[in-house]
Length: 176
Image 1 (cartoon, helix red, strand yellow):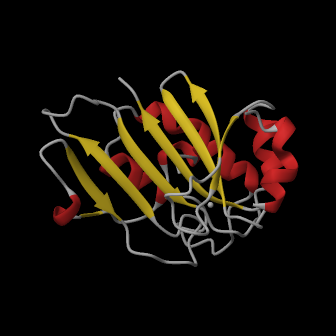
Image 2 (cartoon, helix red, strand yellow):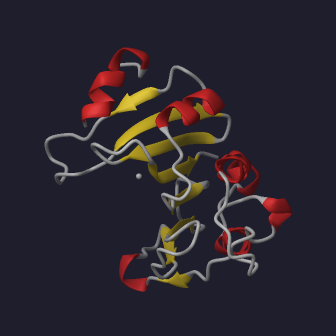
């Protein structure tokens, strides 16, 4: 299903910028990132393949700590603390290990709702025909609806909570 035909369903139904430096809010500027800053950060995800925690931490201004209970022989999970005042309230990286068959990794970014990055803004920037990925019946209530784009390095998914037109989550899944 494409988004164009499903906009009413979506309405009814959640980093890497600045030349590798932390966003202005992280550098002590105190102001929220603009939607263009957020888009520029998302666009540059592909320059970080395979995803590495140190580069993502520098780019987002967030400290990433190992989560050994969720790590495995295939992926090393690192996550920031939750801080709603940040442009990226929570950042998670799943770095592939040498044993991983998937060498690209995964990045999950929570997005602050200020500014509100709307679905139509995402589609204007990344394309008018993303794949629509609604939550399945096996998912918990309130799971995001995703607009999914295939990019040269993997997939880029933009999540919107049901009944909320503001971007809440971005997931980058790299394939190598």
